[in-house]
Length: 374
Image (cartoon, rainbow, N blue to C red; front, top):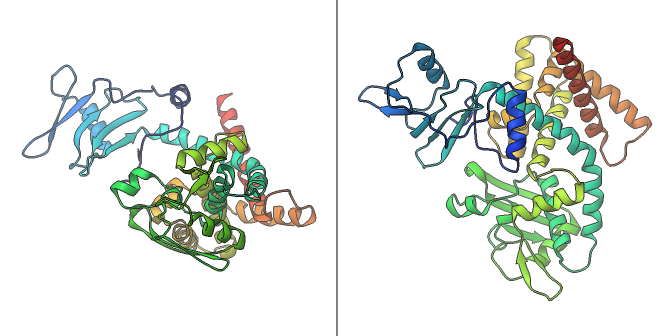
């Protein structure tokens, strides 16, 4: 059910003020499921819906809105917003007791645009991140900065999730910061072998050839503790590294609100553009659809996601729009030629081409919306 439109997990790392501003931009009202809402009551056949004041909901417009939300019948403790313009429309608990959220379609549109605009910021600061990571990897010993730099380099080269201790304990699924050094990692010469189960039960088998990282990982395996990633302070005491530490490091070295997930969004979008570029043009709509599906599937395999989640949550939609109208392939070729003539600093030719394309599409969208506002 996680691929249904409007269904997502609550957002973290965002202030209430930012969320209220986003809701206002979408002409919605920011609401919370802590406020009184419509309750769903299970009957022998179907459900009835009860207003916070205690009476049954009978008006057809409200019932139609609730049905359109398509809340799974198995969900318990269902809360439904009384306001059709609330940014959050419904909350329920799935079979595992996890809260699931269904949002207003306009909210998703505004938040998606903000998320993908953030990717342009990521592209702008990525050269700075890479430069700082190179510097920190050259530090002596295993200080905090060096171990964090190693994780960030692995985020970029393996596309593995950063990891979460809660998932490791409850789901036995792992990411970089929760890898067990003996069970999940093996170093042979200049190659690091990763074998572990990630989110959604997807098995990861990665062989990374990088002599410097292999040396660091080998030394990390000699430190105390189950998890691979620890650092040693100036007194020689070891401390574990968490996903929060990684995100704090990224914000510190970039000067922006960058997180580990941004590496996956960035990579997915660039890889999708490159996959479509290799497939080139199409003769029919059926061929175009087939090429897009092939690109999504190839990226999903590299990220360890389902194709549906990969397309919905990671790949910028402008990539597919641009492929279908022909502007993506033209922009990639033009920018690649410019890059060969005058290489950019800190980004590959392909990354610079995709960034320029997305920047242009965003400018077109802003101009279009401004025209409608006039």
